[in-house]
Image (tube, rainbow, N blue to C red; front, side, top):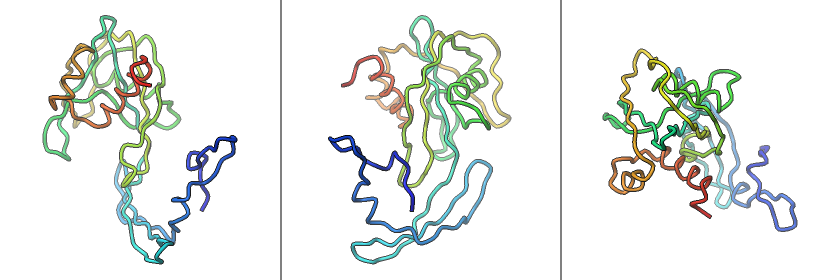
Length: 202
């Protein structure tokens, strides 16, 4: 089974080597068991080489998606609150969504920001990508910083979206995370990338 460059580790001499853990699993087969609008569920059968035991693992196969960290000229962060069916309650998060065909993460971030909040950014900066849940999902989450945001139009949510826009000061975010007011793991991971960009992390 071929591996992408990201699956290799770089040694001190600059050479790439496949991590040993990658060689302990042999993919024996894969099949789709359920297909939906934005994802499909598949079963992968593996052999665990140290023991020879075989098992089936469920994987959620989906497209990458992008979230924006929108910051206004006065330093406030634009959040959205919407109902999430997985937890059956409204959740505080930032704008984002799945890319359309041929769309860059920056373009996705700008589009989702306009559609969900009516805000437009003056500057967009790609911060990096995260693995939201590599145990079950194969997608990457792309994070884009959207600076100089201001309200330029009315939001245009999807037919099944009801979104409340909320603005918070940057300095309030750490306490919001500690208190659990902000508990969306992908958003907190995105904020960590932003914090690193600002020099707050080594």
